[in-house]
Image (cartoon, rainbow, N blue to C red):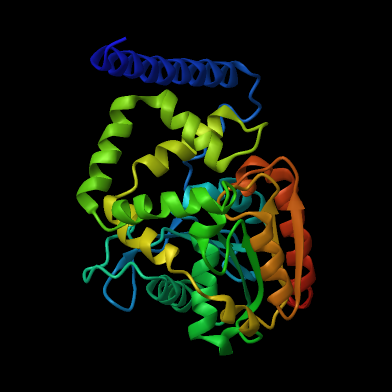
Length: 349
């Protein structure tokens, strides 16, 4: 066979393989969507009824803040994950607001919050945003901080800058599917060291090129919902995930602003907040899904060991958004932890 014919045959083989993979992926997505889904119909987009925002942060960033629950009760502040928004805490605030003051906010550049006027998407800024929410929406009442993914990293950044808050206003911390350092290595490390070395330059090119990231985002829109669903399910969920939850999380994440995908993602890649764990002297609960491919179980174990008063729980068959996917188990863990750390305040109330 001549060289041109061999090249053409090779190209056809690659195209056929790609088409086959896409068809197989779509078939998998179709089967997943056709399964019985007990979460279908849940109004995941529902916001807590009280609008406390916008709250102005240290650099002029306006933060969207909502609340539900008794105004005089101990508070829980929920901080959501990367490219998501406060609605991912739907199952938690709906159940817990009967007994606690639940305060939720959108991270800078996410959801209904504004972009930082000076373009600061650093984790230090995220930690300082948390301080602004505490000062303006919680006050001096006892509070437990609950953070998922980026939200957990924001809590660590807050602890690094404001260690005196722990034991005073902050009585407990919950770190869910998050990490204290080297997120990219944790994500790519599941593929092996050789894949990490090969893929890191590609991720760096995307993170440092907003135009490239925007083109990828537009391409995802063109490729359609099936591919987005497949990627979202693979990266964020376990094998039994609700199709409605996958659709919802994927839609929020895919619609995140380009600055979040580039500038804030770059901050996460440079994450090194292991030292902050030592300053969290209050009880701390680390929760992780055993199928979490973004911040795997090894990250949770490392954090638990570094925390002065840490304990950990692994939720089986759950991925990176365990608080949605396995909300019954997650809420049971959270409720028990709140009873432990806020029992004195509740008794006094």
